[in-house]
Image: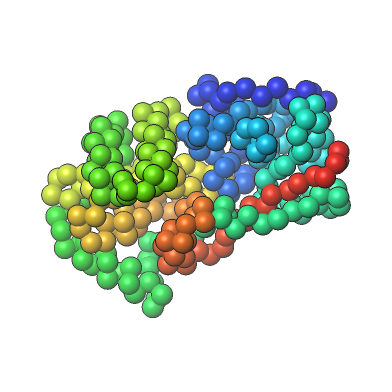
Length: 301
């Protein structure tokens, strides 16, 4: 077997990574190249290609862990390669994986322990639910949209022609959203904005798809993402100003309409343990959670 040699992720890795990501066809947000690339500084992401697999290493020091690799290789080969790397570098083997892969790993390696990481489970919705908003459970969402649709608004694709306006909107979003009296909030949202800026500046190279809503001719909301599997689209970013009621509901719905039914599922990523974010994501009634497990090996597999 090959020896794993991790290095910094580069834009030039995209085509090779995309091929292996398509082979696995996992729905999780971490199985998108754009997500891996734009968060690489914040999470110390490094990559390696070996044995027809795309390996990701995250963290530093005592917090180093791996995402189960995408690609055409088998589970045993993946675990053995990661185990050898962890042993050689003197830290325990920790792998993050979805429910299907976790089940396979724990069957192969009964000594491994697996724990659900609820804070990192992705919220996955039926695209038709987000467009139609049918039934009593979406009554409040329809009311918000009705108020928004009273404005002079328009929707358009996010392209090179309006990216600079989206970057400018970030300044207004920051003023409205960041609690400058809370150092943690300042740090977290400034990190988030850096990732958003990196995403927008590399928008075309990353192959992102996005949408913009204008009110009275001015950009008031935008969103973008990329597919993670043949039937699932991941929304990485959604930003809206608070100037008009229902803007978030509108950009959510109009963008999924814009995707035109190409994807059965819409993955709106995790809540990271935020109570407010969890409440907001649950209010759209996910059809399922894409579960993420932390798998830990006490010794060499």
